[in-house]
Image (cartoon, rainbow, N blue to C red; front, side, top):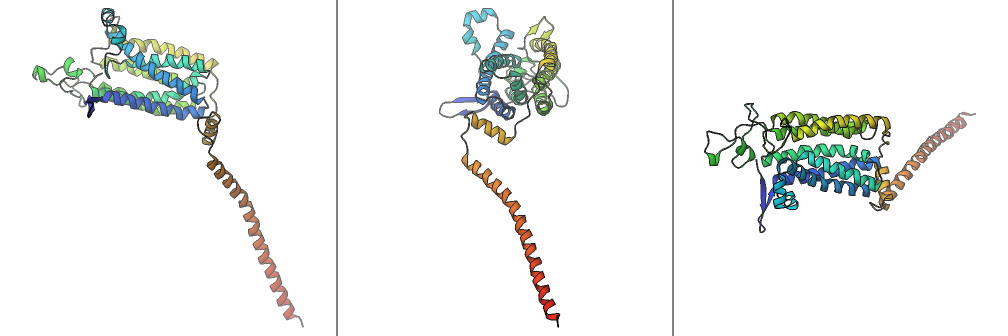
Length: 343
């Protein structure tokens, strides 16, 4: 556990591990999504604004999800919604809240920019998996989202001051310096789910039969995995629904039939995904959209390659010419020998 990676000198500003991993997940997911977006032929500027809106509202949705699970309305009325919403620093974020907020923002923005949301969702699914894998490492470094006590060989203890040490303190240690009991590293379990989903999402993206297929399958797998992991989570700020399920389990149970219905709907009405563009087609598309300037040097290079290709045919003619020349020389030599032998 390392909540603060380092502190900036002069301004004495702590850089939190969770914030760093969250930022890396956004950056990595953004660029990974664009790798597939460009090959899909989606509008660059429209996708850019959509992803920015998704990131902003994912953060807002994640915070609102935590408030809805833990804060009382009396506390919100007393402190004000804005203050409660931005009260924490690199903590108090709910993954499902971020997923819902970001998805709704992407749906609305894609509709405003007039391009297919489902194609973008498919292209973004590997980035979502990458973000899950990276962000949960941040949770591990921050000491949040831990599991219940366990005697398994890989169970881990967290230092004093961590959430695990507060919820499950070691009774044999002094109260003011107690480490946690060995607990499930559920942060790493969920991170592993994300890293396993990453190649699967890429594989599904390349083999989907209709737009939206890979995104919905990734969401369904995550919902099922998260539902199971919640049984061994031990942090006390997840909220409960009906006194039986955690908030995330309840959302997962609601998502599974919803995703099944959407898959059936997309299978019936969803268009077949377009053929992926090659590098030259991607570059030409970006030039036409004004994203990158036309590169005259590359055009000259392509013209040069074309000339070399054309010259390759002429080379064969020259070789043939040389062979013909040799034949002619042999013919002259033969005539000379014939002339010498005649009486």
